[in-house]
Each structure stands twice: as structure tokens, then as C-alpha cells.
Length: 358
Image 1 (cartoon, rainbow, N blue to C red):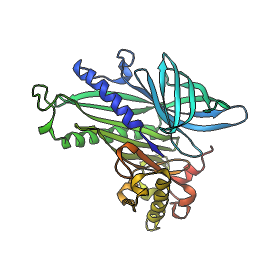
Image 2 (cartoon, helix red, strand yellow; image 1 turned 120 degrees about the vertical axis):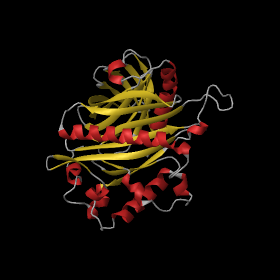
Image 3 (tube, helix red, strand yellow; image 1 turned 60 degrees about the vertical axis):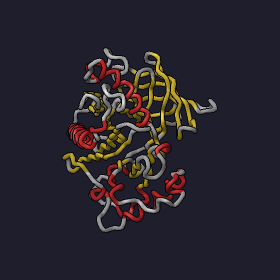
Image 4 (cartoon, rainbow, N blue to C red; image 1 turned 180 degrees about the vertical axis):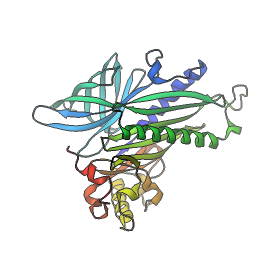
């Protein structure tokens, strides 16, 4: 699956940041959301879509910027991301659901409780022949903060604060804050400031630069929290660039632990080849241009460290220009647990995830 949510959010944030910088704003979302028009709000939610006959577990990410609602969600049974994008009037929203940006798969209508993030509403099929109730409760809210560096670089972060004050939640929050701070520091250090815009110099222009980090929660449970940290940098040109770092936290024997792929799969088992084979076939089916053309015929081992853990399997993320053009967005490939069964670490987090009921 491919997604362009981060590019849309980053563009909207950049537009807001220009206003914020001009007005001297450095704000915390939680404290000032009602005082400033344009400050984004967002929640990680868990719940269901269904009716009295059947109910399907989902998790969703919903963000609000000005009068727009955007985000993504997936059914726990598949892990496949579906994009959400639409309009907000007061607390009521009307949004389209996309499998790809050119393929509408449904419609969401309902209300968002701005105090809590709770979402209630109705999902309707494109032909309006089917409809189901939507009920989502927040598991985390995103706290947004912004500042200006070097007079011309707008820097912002959006980090999760979990509703349940558990040990794993606190550990995940601390990791997200640490990754965000390190990513911002590295991005700022890499900026070619000698070419930075200068409003006093017409030859250098006055377009502002930006560094934006988003600690997005992709999966949440009492025993596993998976986040994909998105780092967006804009330093002029046609568009910015997005990089990724995953943060996977697991409760191991009552203690939260950050886990890596070698904690999930057995070293020396040959899992890399099995994963690579699945990813290349999946991305070719998705239409990833560089894979389809044969330009990409392998998956770098370091790319396999960008993953999140889901009840369905392991989802690997590939940024712009890795598997296709920038316009194609971000590609995500899910390798199911059943494919990984021969390689699983029996003492790792996979066992907890495979017990999840859809």
C-alpha cells in the first residue's frame, strides 16, 4: 500500500508555520488548541466499524488542521492502510476514504469530540448500498510544539501522549521524544545554511525552510506499541523529503523494551531472503515503478529496520525515491506472520500479536 498523508500534513503545517513565525508563535498544542486557528490536533484511536451482525476491529490516526480532517486507518485483520481526507464543520466531518488517492473505497460521516478525540459516525460504501456504525475511542493524543531556528527554519514536532499511564506507554513516549530531538538536531545540522533564504537579499528569496517530526502511533495494545517516526525536511526546491525511524516497544516479562528485527526473528534463520522475496512481489503488485521496471531487484538489509509490528504481520516502510518516484508516495509492505512462521523468535513479541482477536 502507499500513502501520502505525511506529505499533505507537512504541506499544511508549513503553511501554518509561516503564519506562526511571522506572529512570533511558539506554542504547545494541548494548551493553545482553542486559542489559535490552524494549530493541528490529532489522536490515535481504537474501536470498530460494524453493526449488530458483525463488528470489525480497527485502529485509526485522525488529525485536524484548520477545517480539514485527514488521517488513515486499517482493519486489524488485514493491516492495509486506508487514507481519510475531508472537511470539518464544527465537530461534524464528511470525509472520503481511499485505498489509493485515485480509488475511493468509502465515505465517513460523523462527529469528533474535540475535548477527547472520540469519533462516532457512519461508514458508507461508494455505491451507498452498505453502511456500518463507526465507534472509536482515543488511546493517545498528539501534542504539537513549534519553534524557529536560524530565523528562517520552522521546526515542529508532534508526539503522542497515551491515555493509559502504563509503563509501556511512558517508555514509548520517552523513546518518541528522544528520537524526535535527535532527528531534529541531525536535520538542522545537515541544512546548507549558506544557501538559506534571506528576506533582505532578493537573490536568495524569502521562502521559509522547515523541519517537522511526527511520532505516529501505528499499533497500540497493552503489550506492544509500534510507532513510525516521520522526519520531514524542506530546504527549498520542488518539495521536501521524508525519512523514517521505527520505534517498537514490547512488554517483556513486565518490563518495557525497545525491540529490533533480531528480537522478533531468529538470527541466522535466513529470514532476510524470505522477507525480500515477499516485499518485491508485493511492491510490484502495488505498482512501485522502480520494482516493476527492474531498477530495484533487492531490498537493502538496513531498510528492513524500518518496520512496525501489527497483528497481521510486520509492515516495512519505504520512503519516496526508494521504490518509486516522489509522486508515488510512501510504500508499505506487510509480511504476514504465516510467511514468517519458520523464522519466529518464540521468546519475542510475535506471540502476543498473533493472539489478537480481530
